[in-house]
Image (cartoon, rainbow, N blue to C red; front, side, top):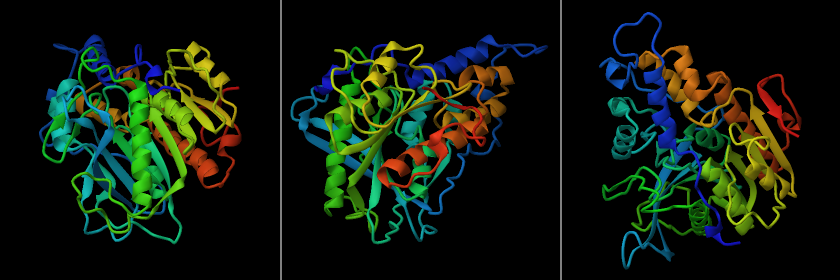
Length: 406
């Protein structure tokens, strides 16, 4: 199947979601309040503390390393003659002896400033959260290679958007590779260039383009597994990373447009043994023709099979183990870092409870974080490690909001 058969029209962008947050604040006055209803980022106190992400629950500390990658099989017409598809990727992994290694920021500073300025939250840039990942820390080696999961972000989003989930997997022994999809993301290159999303009419990056990026990253995973450094700048990698990845145990997941891209990549590449979509639209043109015989899980919110014909059509082509779960009250952005960060932004900016719910839905934020930590881990444990628990068998009293859709 051709990668370019997947379209992005109608997909939800990260920028549109955050823009809606601003609009929701402006439209929802506080009861009895005088003056402007929207207490925006400018209202944040100068002494406000940094935003935080919940710590991963796994037994291992987490390391992280950035990779600068160039796919020389794909000319880049936007960059001009002689240029090829250029990507930034980040590897997250279980680490050891992390104390002397600094923790990584949620996004590189320049990319964070551009991202927040673009969506109207520029004054929050000094409060950008830190992650649990220690930059360059040695890989924890146990004699067995690490299963690998690759991540694809949503439209006009960034590779750190699901750090809660990514570092959770790494803390439980996975190597997770996140990809910054050029021309549809915010990222920073080693030479200081800041990349921001281009207008879709100028650079119509499709889910199939995302999928081609994922497949190229799988090639880089194989190079790392074979002991070769795929970084084009030949920067030093963390001790133990070369030879530590298992190319025979690979999974993939993505949010929104990245969820559709995950399905596309799986259909085209049998190296991906299990796939997970976080509320992916699954809008494909021409319509999906092939079947997928490997395990796939959908975590639905807005794009449910009951309301979205494309999601229902995709489901009908799944021939392996298939799961579709939905958390009651979840919004499109609920299976990501937004559930941890927006309540903090709401508190700093003076939002009402209703304003916050208008953005992240009615699902309890603490429960939302635990859901995104637990269910993807259980899915990949079952299909990449052959370690099956009971969480995916049906409803759990620990997660009363989660429904298994037949």
